[in-house]
Image 1 (tube, rainbow, N blue to C red):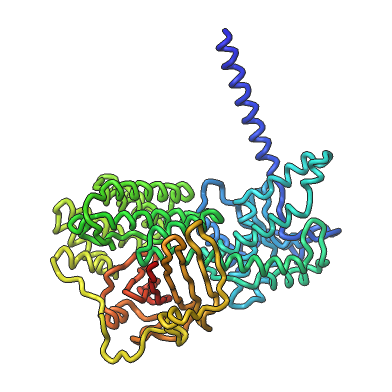
Image 2: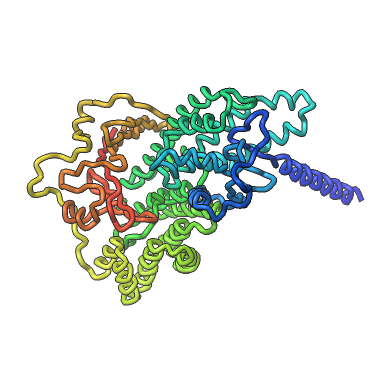
Length: 555
């Protein structure tokens, strides 16, 4: 009897907690506007206040919004509807009751004045509001409203909380816009000033930072976004040259600031590529289409336990990416590669040919479909079905895959080709912005270094403007004393390499100039070609998007 009473009491407690949780969720409902024009009811401009869904403005903004949602890749929660209104007063807002994000037409018109960066400006505003939603910034405001008559409510209802929310929304929204492909946008403070002018807002609004403070905050937040972007880029570059353990720490740093499917996917990729180093030469014959969302080398025998641990770790990261977005194809194909490396062909085929292929077909993702043909070819080859494997590789080669071309040569017993150690007529070393990285390192000519502590052992140093068209990053391992240097081109770089390669060059031209790289890494849109001291990053149609020079310095 006493036991039954205890059970009833426990269920009562659980029921109360559930009710409290539901009430807590309701408290989060409300509206989080970017501004709130004082002493003015929101007004409607123009002849009508009806739907704008058929207007070119709405359609353009919707495309920006959808790219942001996709880049965030967090589908654990319902995606807010996007609306554009003719009302004036909020600029942009997140409405928790209607579960919608509203961009006012007037705010759109302000963004349109930014010319070539109009989409990036729209992404700045919408990314800000999406960050409010994903970071649950409305919860505290709802809590305060319920307890505003108490001292604790009055203490919580301060400008400090709004400043924190607005700054965080600018910061995370800015990184979201970058990850969605809108580039690094550094005109946030200009937009804020233009919006205040267009809306006729006073410099000081109750509950918000002053215009001047908001502009200063915008500049500082821009610097923080730039740093996070460069840490993310460093993680990708370290992964590409095989410094997997170090790259993993950089991804972990980004993950502490920002959660997305790409970060989890890339964490898994670093663990998976690290595991591939612990296979013996005869065990890892083919090139796997592991996708870094942008070679195996043998280390001897007796590493089966280490590699299995790393592969299992990679699978957990891919599962985390899938939990955010069940339709994220790269995580499925990478998970399939992981199971293939474990020798579990049945699961590899399921996650590849079933899960990933269904998503690729739905999204008309030709790159992923090609990479899946490669993986299925490897699975057939490991089963001894060389004829089927060859046909699959040939199909992928016809689609333009260099990875498939390498595997086709392997299955036919042909040489893969080698990197050219020298080049006829080459009279100068590789340079970016007329600077030689080796000379820079020897002379220690690095000025305006900005440093970030990644963890106890690793420091990240950056020079944002090493030259007019480039930046420089250094990863320093304080435990070992080693350093890795990367000198990288910016988008739109006009120069060329020592072997006459420039942005827009195709893969064939690079191979003619530099030979076939021994190390390549697939991305969802292209490939990374890694040579001994230079790296080329290819995008769609295998065209060069950027390149970098790198050098390792052992401790």
